[in-house]
Length: 217
Image (tube, rainbow, N blue to C red; front, side, top):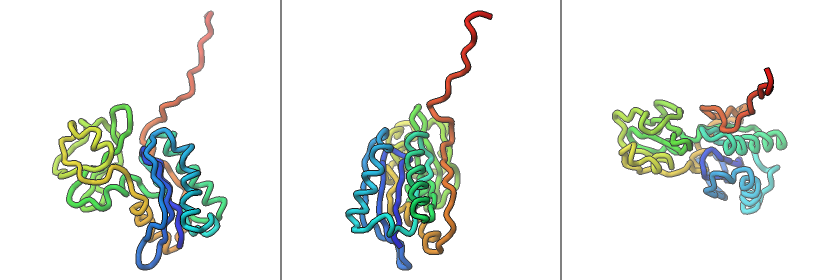
């Protein structure tokens, strides 16, 4: 079964075509552009490019897999809106995966996954041999409890390596293959599609202005 994978929860804008079979998951084509502000402009062309490279059309897709974050509001929203629209247009199920899980799933031992949340914060989760134990959450790096943690991964871990004081040994960004593998059981089972609930974890930067007070009272 052919699956489109999209993720815009981090600075890595990702689109990929994967085949999910009984014998595993194979990545057929992929595009990744690191641009923290470019998700809205980059994702659609990347989807078109991977379909063309794979020699298929959108109508050949059996499902869409999307990274749920956590991530900043604007970037994350671009990916989830696109995935939802594709699923609706194709009458194909859409499945969500925690983006941090796609980084942590292959990390041995006890590991911290941290991605850049801006505002001098990180989105983080803790894993034991690939299984999430805590998180996802958002905090300043110095506020994250690191007892027993052996290593770290993610662009947030790289950015705040001096604060976290952990060896950074894993990938900077989630891989499309890992996202597809984490959804593969649902794809094979032809499970009902899901409502994609974004993991924003905090309010967006842009807010509506407050009601202005009259000049004379």
